Image 1 (cartoon, one colour):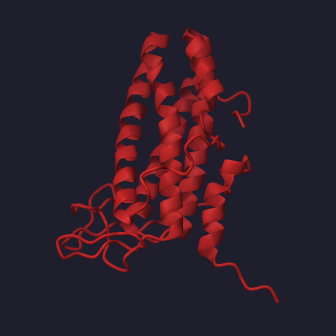
Image 2 (image 1 turned 120 degrees about the vertical axis):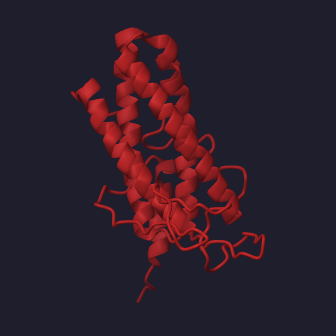
Length: 228
């Protein structure tokens, strides 16, 4: 009889399968993520810890260091895999959002792009801090990989060549694919992740991405399948 595959390894495989061009994990309703504890046991409104590192007490992750007498949070492979994938996807989306300011005069689109750019940069900073807390390598293993929901180099070139309505329509398709994949990956992290601040961040990102998809649908009702 073949030994059972640990569920955490399955979750990691679901998170990184996009590197080979496969489909991401299915969007199942995520379980509620436990709020991240602060130093006094409370939780911050957005679910992230208010302590210096945002880590929870527990087993020290491989490669993680301790400071100030505290113990680093219990990161598992799914936590690290999700953080790395989300960083890679966000780094690809930001240049596309930055094109809106000069590419269209539509105030609703400009407002959406500014809002999304602001929250994406904040999420990127949080993910990088958590990866540092986990002792993960500074270099992202997904650098240069094209995954479902990612803006590719060719996509970005097409966006740069467009303006006005064509730019908005093209960006809407890529943004819809991006947000849909973000929700799927965040759900996988909530199911199989272990570090409270990381699963709480995934929950917050998933909630916000669903709301952003609804806003996008009002600006650009979907009429065709999203890219990839």
